Image 1 (cartoon, rainbow, N blue to C red):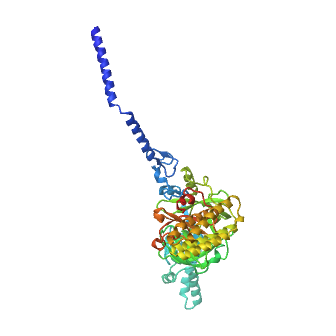
Image 2: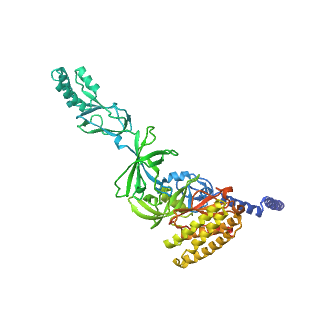
Image 3: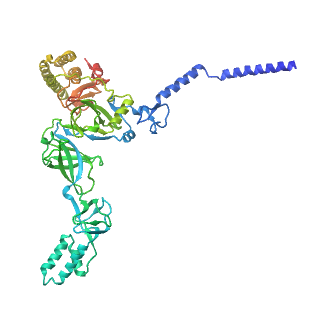
Length: 589
């Protein structure tokens, strides 16, 4: 018995040792386990999923948003491809859910184009009311709903009238003795004509010699029924409006022009306008009427144009964005935006401007508000005529940008601009004008013109009164002044265009710094960039026009480049990452 127990013990121990040995062989090494763990972490980091409407949601696997139930998308799709940290990009689905609406800003630009908004309205002269010419009861309706098209002479309703019965009997009796009493006969017929019975109806009554219990009410003009005021069985009195019929073949375009714009609008000025419902189609008309009275709430007057709508494409109440080519050159003033488009934070507030691109993108733009006019705010700076701003859903965009960690109304970057006197800004604007002369000479490959522009630049610099500045502004200008003079001197002594262009990059760097720090008295100037300059190192310059004209290549590559930033008069420049001071230092020579 003891021997059997010892054999069992040996067998159990052998089994345990064999199992441990097999487990040790099959067990993965620590390095393999750790490597696999690291790999899963890397994958998780690369595949975060978020919601287009609630970017605060970030999950490690696809699925549905726990807040709204929408399908999650890769977080990488939520980042803006513009490179501008002030721009927030959304998906089309998010734009639709947030009910984001945009409209173009009215006002005039330097080319004499005035941008206005308004509506399509029916021509008041083409609006007709069908009224009851005699009292009676409506026995039958042939037009039962608004929006129905009718033609002249078409039956609208049938009416029973005791007064009409008496008038018919008078006609029948008068027709029997019309040879003896023609005046009574004509008076009986005229009475029915005044009640809008047609000649055929009157003739049928006379020839039949019998009284008709019911008479048809006919349409006086062709058009669309916009209002039906009666039902079967209603009793109507003389003069009561039964139907309203409007002819939509001719329409009015009614635009709102603010009092600052009225002097530049004349009768006959051409208008090009678009409507939201007909994308890509441009309609043409001419100013036919300017309202002599201003609305006391909006301080705007109505501008009217007439348009032929025989194709029935345009509908009353459609919103219109119009451009009027005026004779006067605009000053860029008189801009206003709806109150719903502004995120208010004092005199300097925020709007969102739609950015052109494949995905819906919106740029946060600081604006300086003027006085409030009804439901609109005047804009003193920060926008240009024709900018497309968000008028509905602006808070949804700002909240989404804030939740995703981008700049928003509550987390704006610091301002790089320094407030200076208008006199000093006027003086450095002359410096910028001289710089533009240098730039344009390089565009034309004109070395002599380049050096003449530099001489003008030096003269403008000598006329800047530095005593107008104090503290930080003075220190900043002194640094920029030294760089401007050094770059100008090197361009003046350059033996050829290639050498001039190299030093023009340094001049542009300081001009951009001057513009961003102090601002200049130009409605808009543009920071342009050529990625191929100096052996693909890239270089910036400041331009007074939006179209690209490259000073680094001239005629050989005239349009190479892109607009990186727009500086608007009175708008502060934000101290963003990748600013001029960072991005241009490699081009100093």
